[in-house]
Amino acid sequence: MLMRTMLAVSASLALAMLPGCGVSTHTAYVTTPLNNGVLAFRVSAATGRLSQVPGSPYAAGISPTAIVVSSNRKFAYVTNGGEADISEFTVDSFGKLTEVMPRTRTGLNPSSLVLDPSGDFLYVTNAVSRTLSVFAVDATSGTLKEAPGSPYATGFNPVRVAITPTGKFLYVANGSGVSISGFAISSGALSPVPGSPNTVGNGPNWIAFDPSGKFMYVASLLDSNFSGFSINQNTGALTAMVGSPFLAGTNPSSLAVSSTSKYLYVTNLTSNNISVFTLDPMSGLPTEIVGSPFATGNGPAFVLTDPSALYVYVGNQTDHNIWSYEVVAFTGMLTNVGTADTLSSSTTMFLEQ
Image 1: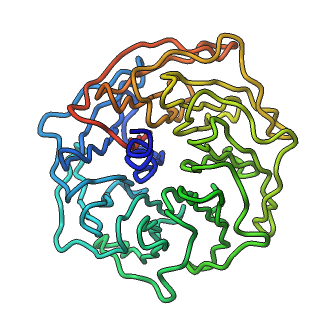
Image 2: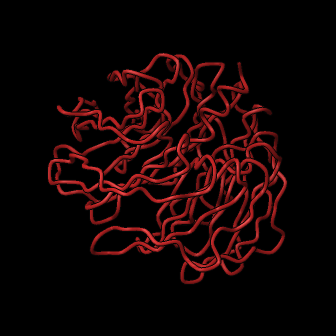
Image 3: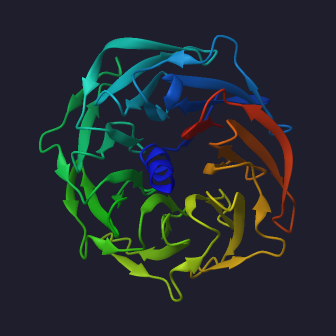
């Protein structure tokens, strides 16, 4: 049961935060693979609560696993894990998604995706093919064209891809191995960073950076811990933090760093809670706060933070909902302020500012 849940979680994770057009609300998108849909929610900037957008969910391909929206809010891309392709959507001023055909072919079981900060290239992990595909993005139409040299080899079962905030380096969590593959980026093309692949714990399935891009954290689902690394800003080489790996709850499924770099959040899939850590600004070392961990729903599969750092969102895969938490000032403690139904098991959430 745990392995099936691990694949459902780790083969689906993608997260981004982009500037939006409103101050009172912003839009969030949630992938729900079992009903082949993408839900849209309005997110209140004042309360952190979510309300479903009329007309959603929107139909995608078979088993949509991850979603990302372009920085100009014109296009959205969804990996369809059961079809080996990507759906492209146009996004209107109200956040409505309309799919544009045909879909773009990928490797087998596309599991996660990310846009580089410029929006010029889209990167997609292919879990079964053990590859990473790179697509050039047409700025006018949003259409995708596979880049020269793509796809690139990764480790076993690449389930999560993430790019540093500077856009210089890209890292892939190889979920069925014990490694992270690192690449330097040059005009979309990739080359391995020194020391890649790096060894981490069993079942690495989520990657997060601090906003400066100096530190990286990796959740290891099967070891109940997470690893911390410092990133060489010139080469992308990784150095393990003193004391790494660090204990979390049972089967940590995801993690996220607040926009202030003050807190690290780790969801624990089978202990049904979220661990909260403060981060040392110089070393990146985590220290668990008083009162942590905090209760979640059943099967917390992903976590993300609001760009304001005032709210935290946790997707509870078993309970089919998302919990909104308010971050208590000064202490970092979490208070549940709302629950939104996702109708089915959710695997990722994309949040606009």
